[in-house]
Image (tube, rainbow, N blue to C red):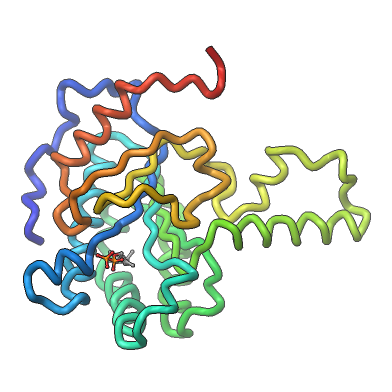
Length: 248
Ligand code: FPP
């Protein structure tokens, strides 16, 4: 761990506790570029990315943010070279195994969303184990989007609802936003702030339904260099925004 975890341990004084986002999502972009800039293989960027994610998760907990969702692997990421995909799958598995004890100590409830059936069996088992063991934890809800696609999430919700209608369990008029949300992977969690590192102004198929009224924050900083100071900046910007939800 290169980031000093005692740095900015407390919520910075200029942030208002009662106006913090409840749920923050991160698109952790720039790992490959970070490594390339240093003449390192791309996988070293992903390794450093894990350290950043751990510190931002701990920071959310220290500062009183209730939920963090991280985009670890998109449905499009299968198109990367096999060695990189294999490395990422092994990395997820190893991190889960290594961090489970700490997640229990820190009261983290971990959940995975996405098409998990397509992941390697050994990773599926580790995912299952970590979700089961941490399900009673209430310190912070940590959601990892793995083999996740926003359109796919919406499609599977449509299919599940259509099946219920076909079976006569549901009338089309009963389909409203609340019911629809209930069929998404991320049931029941409005998103307040989406952060993207490394400068790209794109949503990249992440939480398409949930992002509807979220604030977007994009920084040029590459994910391995993102830290509590940067996160503080994102939260300050969030608190300066006037969230009108379409009203005046
Ligand atoms: C995007 O950077 C990053 C990823 C596709 C992987 C992110 C995964 C982690 C940080 C590991 C998380 C681990 C767990 C267990 C949750 P990029 O490779 O697209 O970077 P580039 O745009 O510079 O090429």
